[in-house]
Image (cartoon, rainbow, N blue to C red):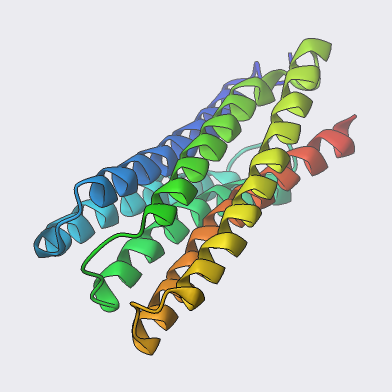
Length: 214
């Protein structure tokens, strides 16, 4: 099978590990905003950065071994593109937390929680697709499952876009917000959408690799 070599297993496991960190970051963000306490932001930033750092370490370990591997499960540029795309997801989630801190957000808007729920779902679907990815060349069933996951990711991305548009509109029609608060929340929703876009980018890499080896 396509992922049977030791080097192949290592890289595919590395991708899944990195997706795990993205999922941890998304779930931690949900935990933060569910019981939001601005006084705990320093503590939360430290924990979130640790998750992001662990994802970076996994990525760097993968890159360090690239030049030493005589045989890879996919081309080197595909390994780099996949690792970079997944790393960007975790980085983007940390960026959201940094904006909550920098803009001194005191209360969380309910529509932020709605978008974070989509983020959690779309990362989960990416992890499922990545679980099938090692067998995509050898198994028609794996190919079918991955394609179904990619369609689900696209649907969730569209849902995220809809929530983003409506959330930003509500920000600018909320007369209780000052101009600076409205601007801050508008930027935060941009960063939330960036996470969803980053997942879609990772899905695009998966699809590109499958087409290349199809």
